[in-house]
Image 1 (cartoon, rainbow, N blue to C red):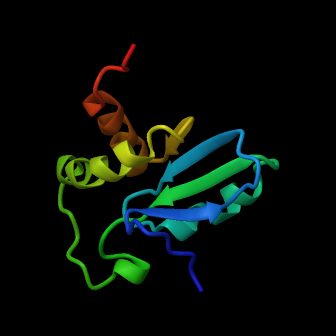
Image 2 (tube, rainbow, N blue to C red):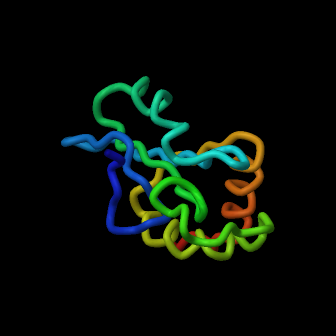
Length: 112
């Protein structure tokens, strides 16, 4: 059974008791968070690894797909902002990489 967190947009893949860093993966177009599970297993102890879970995939299969990268970024951004204090690295492939870049450019400037 899939690990489903409180936020449907962020799927926990590998937890850590003593978290050194948190990584969030963005799956490829048509991909689901579970695609990233093998990558999550390769991280050493201390890494909390999660992946974005897009609508229309796996446990969210009844939800309508988001048809543009911009629309996906707009819907996913609130969840990423809630996690921002914990995320140390974001990574993606193909659509995931484009989406991760859109997220980065829409982020507010860091507080000083």
